[in-house]
Length: 300
Image (tube, rainbow, N blue to C red; front, side, top):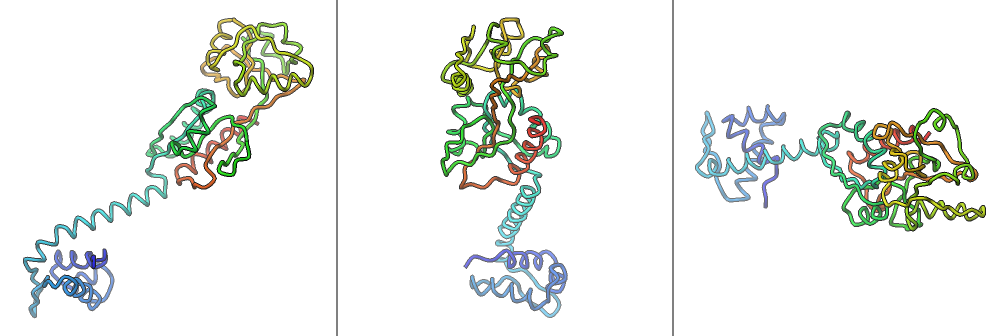
């Protein structure tokens, strides 16, 4: 039978202190309890660990051979206990997060900064992926959860928790007039050079379906695959980008402004994506709580 941690603790204390009385006081138990723990080890392994005299205990050769291993096991158990406490108190740990590229650029820095300021010792494994890859990465277990714009397909193994929504916007250069509009209509921008995501992407599909219901067809001047490409082209005067308002990272593109589009208003969501049958670690739970607070404020 393998010795218990309590038995090893009694053994090492009696060895170090040379006294059952002192060991009992250290562990706050009776002397008989310490004697029983030592006797259990001796009987289990048929080894004599201490020579007892009327005045003192003397460790045997077997005891001296075993004490190093006993102390190593106790140190490892104490280290594990401390590590578990650190994980529970968010003083350590590692989070693996999958984020769609647009969210990673425009929204994650603010969430990341808020989390790091409170939990600087937690490591973060960040995977920025294309929106179409987000679900697969999370469901494959490569990330605890994902952040991005996903479609709720009703799959029972997937949990989708919406965090924020913003309308699709016209994003253009601040010229003293453009940024003063509270809203623009689709009809009002159709004659402009428009930059959109390519056909087949979720944003473009949502735009085309919404406009088709009103008898309109979008005819962009440029189609791109990456949001940052659209914003960079707009910043250089190539046209007006049609993107969710939250996808404009203002610190990266200070010359651009996002004006919501109406008639019709088309909303895009940012959601938390996780596996329904897996719980999040304490560190991940706190990251999600901060993300909800930061993104809901921004969406509002």
